[in-house]
Length: 250
Image 1 (cartoon, one colour):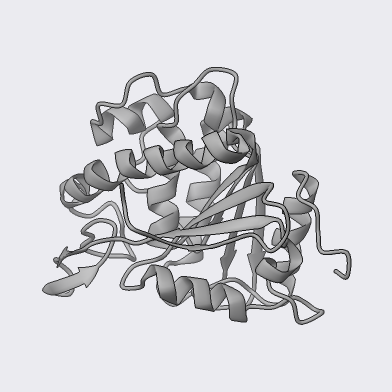
Image 2: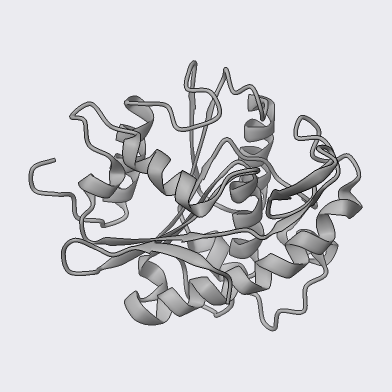
């Protein structure tokens, strides 16, 4: 199974967040960034929801064409500004990691119930996590939530089925029910220097076209990350609406 960094729940473990880091980053870096990103009360989401276990999968080092060197990324990508360029280069990485991440989500689902697993990602991690969501198995099931920040749609088709076919995985029984029944929160900052906000808007529109219920938030500032404090507040409110219990002091 894919390597991970995990932070245990501080209270009784009720939910698990699986959070995928972005391009040229790592599990350790993104876990620290989340810890340092605070709401209006100076609390991170890890403070706000003490019953959550955090799992940060780690991408392998691969050759990255646009940088002409080996870096830690989920898949090769020629141009972040135009993720549809040289789409064929994205296939091998996604074909390798998506089945492993599907297994990770289902493993955590056996511990707390799939309906108590939150799948999330930033940037390229968001783009990767979408394909994980589309390929989860089991009828009449759902995740607690999907959260994407500063992301885009890689290898997107006109339907979820077409996106699966473009990726060409051999995962038995992917379920339309899982992604359609999973509430989605997508956020993006207008001043993002890495991924244009138009990519986030296109992602929103694509997921809505696939039949998902999407909450969309865009912020004037925040760069290639979560806007704070308002973005943290919005994510916390969204998770609370999905049934997560906040710290009694929050």
